[in-house]
Length: 361
Image (cartoon, rainbow, N blue to C red):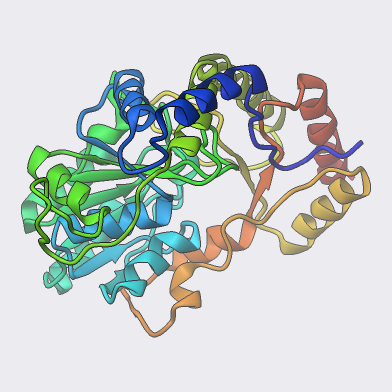
């Protein structure tokens, strides 16, 4: 039997049908319906945030956040899922890359400071909490204040994570979430934006509904990025049981770390942050050893993935780069192992045993 890299949470059909029945009875299928409002309020309460706006996917979440904050140029990380960069380029945002911290794989405040000291023309910093591991939010805040820049965090992996007792989503001018099926919490497709300021939230709410204002008049041109009621029903169903899911994934993550810490490198976790078990990355610097591990895992029907590669400054090499050597190194050696709510501790031990044998051979 295959140990899958990821497996989406399956909604309880009895609960889901109950929510879907409410939609059918009301006849309100989209456009900020009752389940949309219910999911918004429940997520704000669960995550400890305000000004949460549900949207149709995590990519549009970044684009709408940029539009609401009037961002035309940004400096970002080269080590992230492609959407972090492509969402900026898609809407014509002048985008440049600054390097990551080799210890945690997140945008490096020191390198960011050096980049902005060379060129202060960018409107914003767009950083990713890679694998759910929070950025140095204090360091990035200090730099943003120093150069008067807005900050957007791509928090697609960071659902439920806290830093020093508060939600990681409360840092920056906006944070974005993805509710894609592969994420810890999902609505099949979907996402959210959490804004620091209510004014930006209200602007964004108009933007995702074609720019239509509360009085029905047309404002600035917008787009259709709303989350419909059926997707909200899935979100509400899964949110009912998300706490045990997070606890289980975190337990499995910690088991991986305990079993592999003497054999492979792993990103250093933010010392004041909680974990959510979103991903299990390891780093194998030797390319031949990495290939042996991937082949050995595959021979045992265990999936793995080199996630993320290539470094995005290489994929989008026409964009300005302030030097991304650390990202090139990490993207060449990183490997994600199976981690989801349906694997068992025995599965984890099977994966780690394969890796140990290859390294020891």
